[in-house]
Image (cartoon, rainbow, N blue to C red; front, side, top):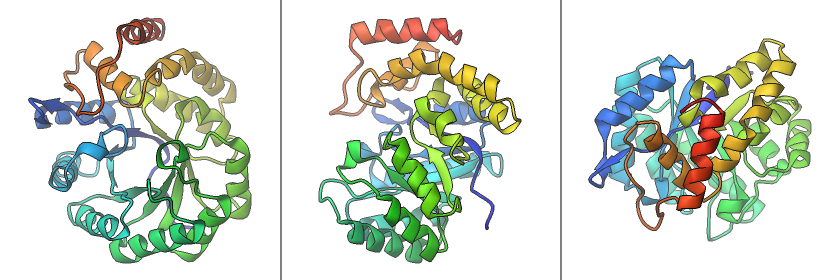
Length: 295
């Protein structure tokens, strides 16, 4: 079995903006902060990075700039999913050429592929791009669940289909994935409130929103677990729950961008149709950050 792209924490990084454009000096600061906290990887142009409103040109620039800056210090995983297989193939090839170490491919949205369609979709991307692929199952966003049988088929039959970011919230489904793959899949939590439960089923880390604002603490949840300190890992997971709840009080990435700005990292606003966090939720977020001792 090949080594995973990463173990532990991968941050689904926000995309900083200034005057409506990507703020590359701030991006450097954010990437350096992740490295300093011991984070192993970042996803760029994921949901948290506002992929839906980034142009293809912006995405490729984001991947290339980041990889040139971090070198081997961080694994760069490019979000290149699309509801068009052709588009996803083209973007994935371009991301690989730009230096991305791996790809995060969300299940096709809106047109709602069948499970057979998902197999063909992921296979086509994998065969064209060659880079390691992590499937992203988040039916709450896409309307399509990646069934355990589908994930198992892809991992067993497509060499570079190596992992899954599981954000269904369905622990029974996640357990079934591990059963059907004999644990031979790189399983990552896609929900910050389920890091420990998913690691207990054989997960090897998390693709995290929380680690934007609390990279060291998120790192420690995983590090304590892998070091055998199950109690310490669980306690930190539970302590983080109020902050996690506040970070999802409105649709991601609205709260996390507000949190970064509250911390003094000027990541700018959001691209429409996303709007600023409402005042009551901002107050809730600020309190949760203070209680978690990060502000």
